[in-house]
Amino acid sequence: AQSEYKSFSTDLLENFSEKLDLKVQEVWVYGRKNTQLEDIASAIDVEIGEPILNLDLGSSREALIDLPWIVNAKISMQLPNKINIKIIEHKPGAIWKNGNQLFLVNVFGETLYNIDPNNFPDLPIVIGPGAAENLLELKQILSSAPLITKHVTAASYISRKRWDLHFGEKMIAKLPSE
Image (cartoon, rainbow, N blue to C red; front, side):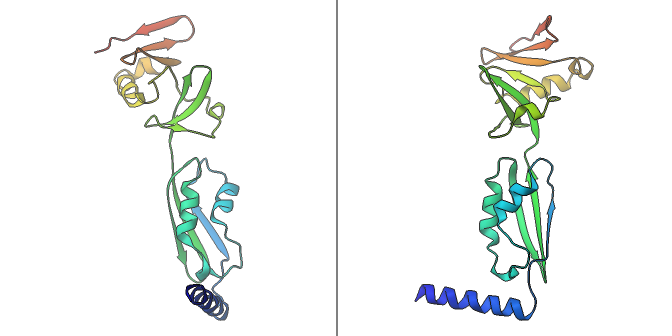
């Protein structure tokens, strides 16, 4: 009985959408900087010409949030034929070198998997265990000395309690733990 009801309601929405010409004709995406449009299109699984009232916006939103760059998303219909997608993406914060591996981390030090850190050559490099998680602390330290900050090429987190600032390959400033 449940599936008969769902089938009936789906058919009713399709007929209603057809009679009023409520079909997807436009999909607008706002807030996208790093997420590929193809990935968004694949995640929402919406076809142009599809009855707009048949869309499962909740499932589409969850699929968007599963994409590596997307923190949050809002999807809405604008009848008769438009879908609006507003996304909030992670903001790249640094390249984290942990052992021999490089990871992109956001401004809060959270690792962003499945994203090539080599695409962000201008980001600072933080090195060592705990470096990513303490990125905000490093940013506070660096913000207090902007003239020095622009010359820092990397920062190593030492013994999970202090930072070494690298200026090129030959000079290191060893900051105290307090």
